[in-house]
Image (tube, rainbow, N blue to C red; front, side, top):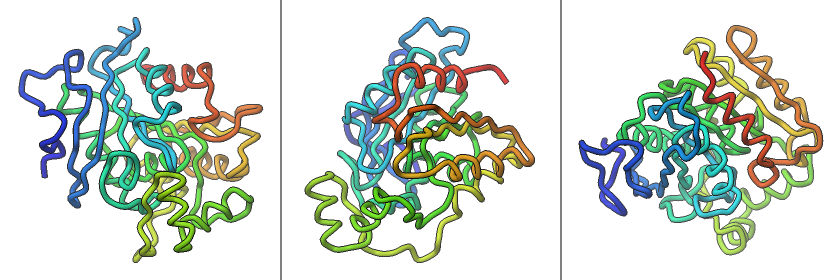
Amino acid sequence: MDAVAKGLTRTGTDVRPWNAPAEALLLTVDGVRIHAAHRPLSGSGESAGRDLAVVVAHGFTGAVERPALQRAAGVLSQYAGVVTFSFRGHGRSGGLSTVGDREVDDLQAAVDWARSLGYRRIVTAGFSMGGAVVVRHAALYGGVAAVATVSAPARWYYRGTVPMRRLHWVVMRPLGRVVGRLGLRTRIDPKEWQEIPVPPVEAAALLAERGIPLLVVHGDSDPYFPLDHPRSLHRAAAAKGSSQLWIEPGFGHAENAADEALLERVGEWLTSER
């Protein structure tokens, strides 16, 4: 199924990254409309070339229009073209959030759109829930040159911190889902997973088979996930493949806490020659 749906824009055969549409509505393989946005290369990073795009996956309760994702996209666009999108149940996208399961299909729709814009090489970067999604997507779909995961969980159902216990209440309880919809502007699927998705740590181990390098970034002040999560992801990917682990002093959680200097380093890693 064509990932580019009728909506905000249409793409044509003459589209190139530097004159491509700024926004689009995409259609996933399971029929969910996904709002996406595009920024062409804005900096002098010609060493990366105009054929490289970073597709960025936000954290739970994020969206294309949120300031933290806009800031991240602005920094990363100094190194490559950038495609951002809102996961299902978030922002202007349709559907309901499955909190990391079917979101891999949303990411694939965004990757397909980036290719339709003329980008020949795609890398992905994700934050928190989006960090879990980019690892799972690379393992399940492949087709990307590198993956950076920031503040991601290694396994499902973690409740070892107060913020994660609160998040589970939002996701699992009817009143919590009302709070999610009204207070956090996130629409959550009330149905539990029928099959437990491949955990991020198992997906990380599969990246070596696909030859996809992984960067794992985590803060030593992350209030959601302690350091055994990034270390587990790194060990799984490094056992047979290429993985780097950055433990960032004083860094908190996901795109809201990522400063410009850290985003620049991630951009440099994603666009480096390998």
